[in-house]
Length: 187
Image (cartoon, rainbow, N blue to C red; front, side, top):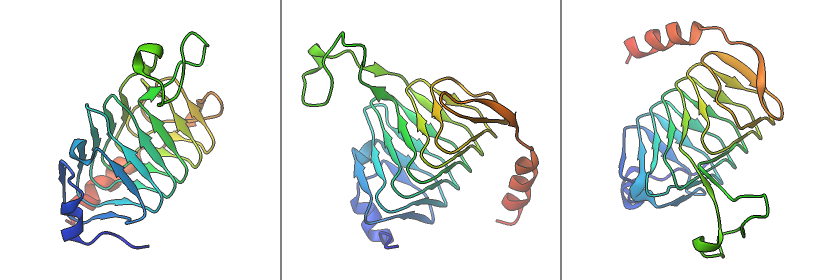
């Protein structure tokens, strides 16, 4: 994988970025001046990150795997230690599919009724391959989303959820919080 060297990262125009940030040169970053990235972040090949006016905030120790997309007009927050698996799509904007308005970005806003709402991905959240997160969703810390899930409602802390729509299927162990403390001590 070919990551931007440090001097090239500066040229992307990110609002801010921390230490040890690895962004694939094969990813696409739009509205970089509205994107903040913490330390120890890796963004893999063919990811699309497109920020709206409210921005995208990516915490520290976050991995965004290949072919994922993070797109929105409202704020999207991905907190520390989150893992976004391959082909995950996170949206803070969606067209209205009811037929009450026109759809797609070629149409002026006055003919559309998009759904705009912030998205928050909590600390230690892992989102499985091929999952979709819709506008307005908060996935609270420690939760896990199974592969190929559609998340349209909030997920409470330390829940394992999966399906279409995603529903609670279990409770996640809390060892991750102890391991986080051990990891941070050694830094």
